[in-house]
Length: 243
Image (cartoon, rainbow, N blue to C red; front, top):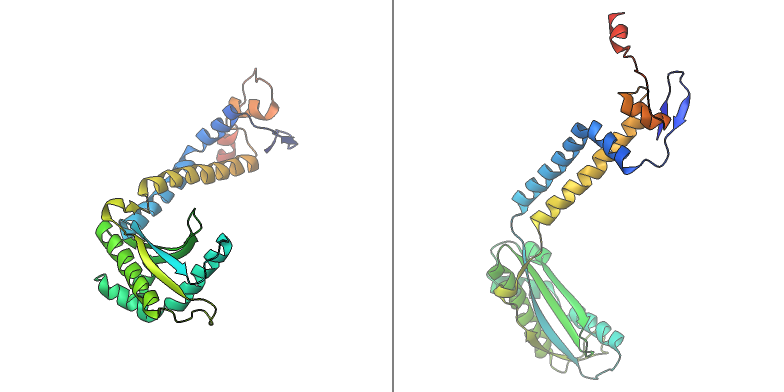
């Protein structure tokens, strides 16, 4: 940090100790409190608008007609099957089966089908769905997963993805409301808002303190001069106002 003495000469403050940093922040505590308060209010408003957010997951196992031992190939295979089967018609039918009352686009925004590979090298599709409650989350995930299995098996031995692959599918993991979890934690975001507010408010406080050209008290003088102040620093601010 940089300040000036009474002659206007620049004095450099380097490597502020924790005690001096806390002193600066305490001197600007109003600014820090405002930054924290604004971010906390923003998180509370966002939480109120968004509401609870639960996520449930169903797992679909995908079996290729020509098995491969390579995990990388299995994941690519799962992606190709998803690309061939996941149509808008599939999405709309899954939303209807789940009893979704909103638009299909909203259902799609809450849906997250992700191709993956299990530890034993099997290609799977993990279908996650976010709902306002655990039952809605499980219903959306299961509806899409079951319909996906039906569509893949209906194709039977027909070739997918440009004629290079054929597949079968089965539901190996059913989404349960009891296993749905909160994907949005208001408390965690509130803690992050407080931490970010302290950082931003502290940075602003240090910036203002760096640009300041006056010592507020003896403690400020000691921080700048790096030496104890044995005298009294007169306050000429009142004389300036009288003139």
